[in-house]
Length: 274
Image (tube, rainbow, N blue to C red; front, side, top):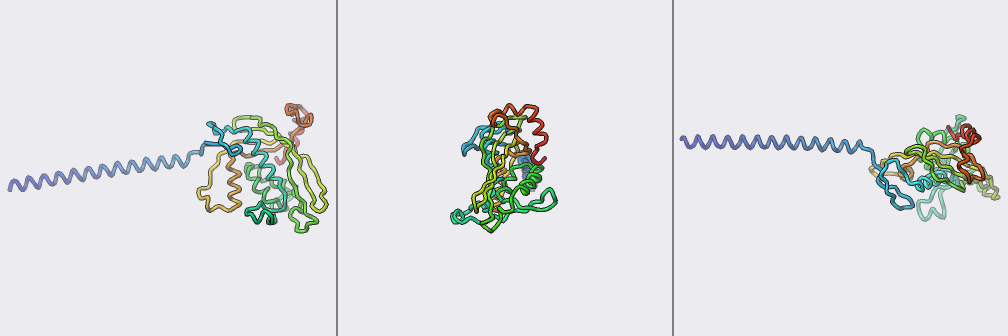
């Protein structure tokens, strides 16, 4: 009888120890999951670092999130401005068949400063996403005013095309960390397809560029063609936030002349959309 009681008492002690140990493991597991959750939240709130910048398809070493390669900035300015002033009247080809037979560009309606609406090309609209949000709206309004309605005409006798011919893009001049001033000398050329007559307008601008963060869309396979193009523009991690008239001295070969009093007056009165 005494032996039976001793065995029963021993069994109860083992079960109690096992229950306490199991409870302790569950508490540790709960603490571990809470720590993991906090780590994941911190990662989701952290800004995406600029690990690699591409120039001509080649990676550029970069440890400063605000640093950008000068040649990369020049290429960004050239591509953006060329895209914005591409008034071909057709959409960029998406297939081999469309190379020889491109689709007509129906344009996108934009409100003008006068309160009406005029069209900009799809290329201009996509390229404008390389601008800061506060600058983009006013800039697009001005582009809508500048874009001839004949760009979207079905009558070949009336069709007008336009393109920006860039003569020179000056090396970026850093004005503060993560911000640069880039001078561009170009001509905006409008051509009437029926007789080949051209209208050439000088387009010389001081373009202010700054570094920005970029977050890719998590479900790339669900993006439309337009959305892919917009995300590709923002992937440059740069944006244009202001544009001014560029004061040209000595046939645009003397950038230092832009510091003269005459140039300062022209800049103050010649902001593009500010």
